[in-house]
Image (cartoon, rainbow, N blue to C red; front, side, top):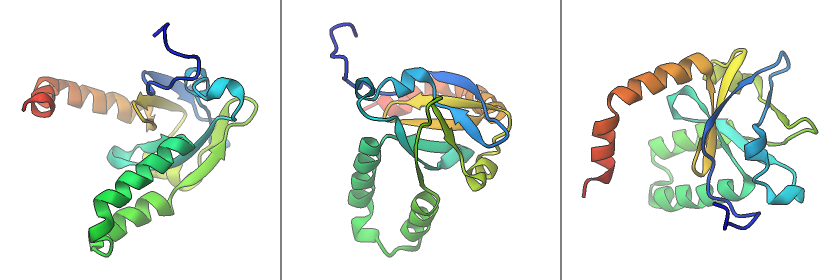
Length: 159
């Protein structure tokens, strides 16, 4: 919104097709990088495995909030097998990156393999995070979810 302050963050939105180069580098869309306080802080992200064979990306502030929510949700279940396994997958595969001068981050090979990333990738804004998808997998996911969109809306918004 125009009335919003220059540094206000309203969430990541949209999706952008990017190219993964031979060194596993991908450019983070300029609109996403621009959300960092007018360039006073470098664009930096945590990246890890996500559900649906995509990668999750968070700003440092969002990562911290996400960790707090995760801890609150799992605190009493800390030693349950499911929590231990989720923690190992999410935190054991997490990496922190600062974008280079060209706005790129390097995605570690294990994460590239996990998400099936090849040349064409899609960087998706999903409110408080970004996701990186193999373009083909993203298109398939969109088609599948779109078929059930009305039911999803009713399920989420019904009281």
